[in-house]
Amino acid sequence: MAYLAFNTPDDLKAVFSQEKLRTKIVPEDQAIFRELAPVIATEHIILPSATQRDPILLVKIHRRQEGMSREEFQERWLRKHASLVLAKPATHKYVKRYVQLHNMGPVSEGEPFWHPVSSGIDGITIMAFANMNDVEDFLMTDEYSEIEKDEHLIADPKVSEYWTGLNYNVVNRVYPEHATIR
Image (cartoon, rainbow, N blue to C red; front, side, top):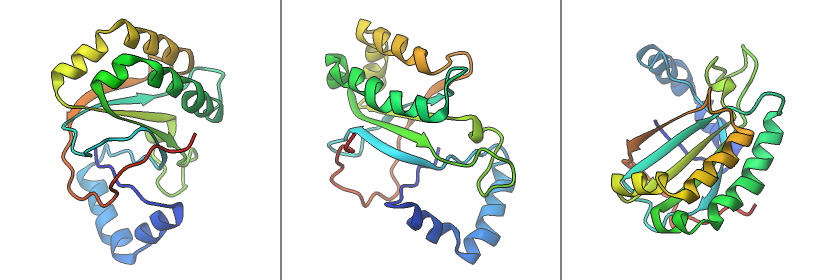
């Protein structure tokens, strides 16, 4: 997962509208990474990282429940679900960073950055941990069980997915990190 952050949508447009990037790099990436599904998202930092060097990530891809709009999913996820996650002592014991990425990308074929996979993604959770034991211990708590039950009210577990990965920062010029005003 490559994670690029921009201050505003205009900054994103400025970078990706550059001729060399548009005509050379993006087509090359699409040829090399055929399954690459770009997600253009608004980042909501729920629990900021103290160090921004947390080595293990838990990444969850969310697809909303049937009958719910993307906007309804994202609103409930940000307002109610994030508050539930923050209310749990296990979150503060194990989780070093908690971010919600709200997909604001295209849903129709032909639009820039449209991809059949990413157009169906409604949000991405990124939680950072100090080590794999902390991930496992967090996922085994009764508190996480409550978090997951609430998550399943808005995100369909049959079409959502998650995995863990190593976090390696190449460049990070946003320091210190601050929680997003919700």
